Length: 579
Image (cartoon, rainbow, N blue to C red; front, side, top):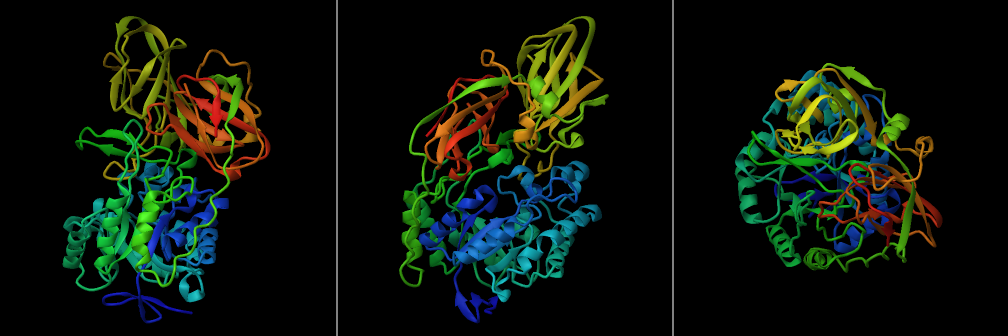
């Protein structure tokens, strides 16, 4: 079999120079039945390689318990079938605008700032995970006839830390697990990032969206020899809830790609196809001053303004980048595959059954925990979902402000069973004072754990306490409602009844489809929550935008009757529409 190596100026395949024209496509953001189509789209765009991250938290939801941990191997087999090489980026941290940057909540909740260092307990968990994950990479290396040509150690570590012993330990662990193809690191093209994130003897690559000449000049100051590569060419960007939709002009993206290739470099287009953050796996960022960072949760769509859109269709950017890539391709480019089938009709789903949140929690929730202070999501074992906190205001006492210290991320508050407001942020008070005695409920939803920067791994829920005036209210009951609990057999046990005036709760309905196909689901009048179709969680919706509909993969639908659930957390609308 051919050997892929790193030369003084080029990548070499069997001793001959090759240029990597790669595209990012995350297997976990695309329905598995649509992998083949998306990989064929990469080939048609003029790419010869696919890159993917591996999200640790998706595959190890609890220590030592694995969930579909062989999915990567199946994806790599599909890449080989499509005629593509593969770059694997297993982390353990990946960023990727993914929940907690791919790190398990049970790990960061216990270790805090000790993650991503040479801490022995942290490295022990990493070693267990890599020992489980990496055999499917090792046996698919190009030296064994597979597609894998490179593996990345960590990810953009220079944007976070400077523990060189940790990075060296990861390199040694990858080698010890049998990874023999070249290893790489990737960082921003800045001196402090390359200093913190590079490993002697491991090829460094850089990430940027423009300014290739300057970026590669910075890289050359740190790495005088070796092939140049942009591991993440940001041809678009992602969106945050409540912000404007981000777009990048196709001509501008094409010009930046041309500059990379004219420099003789290899490239990984990030993202070639973004896909979707199904099942609430979207992460979040923190923006502003380090002492007062505003939470910016990422939307469900990971379309990324990529050349291949969320539904797998070519965009104008696809054809502009294809023209640039064609000049570096041997022979004519492959033809575009047929587009996936679409629903072909506009359908209405009527939601005729409803259960209030308390009943949903009783049927699907975790056991209740009593504590002096509010336990965090991590302490309750909740990764994605919400927690109901209950606390009493003693009395008699006159009205005082009711506030929450250390709130992450958003709480719908009820006082004596009546909606009293919505709180968000690290410290905020209800608009109306509360007198005692009173019973207070706070339904807190995690909007996604931070995936980048010094706040990565921060706890969720109420991390401080509930205050009346400036007095902590002690004696808290907390109960988690995890998204993973919404399984068909479990939902069947929820005591549904006729909906009551758009109240929060779980709604259930159905619609008939003449044939299956990709669709968009619209929720006019709905506020914030999650949607499932035939038991498949499409992800979060939120009326603040900019995302106005949810992508429904065709394989999720079926001919005839289809069931839909909507977990609404603030205020419901009427019907849903698919089309």
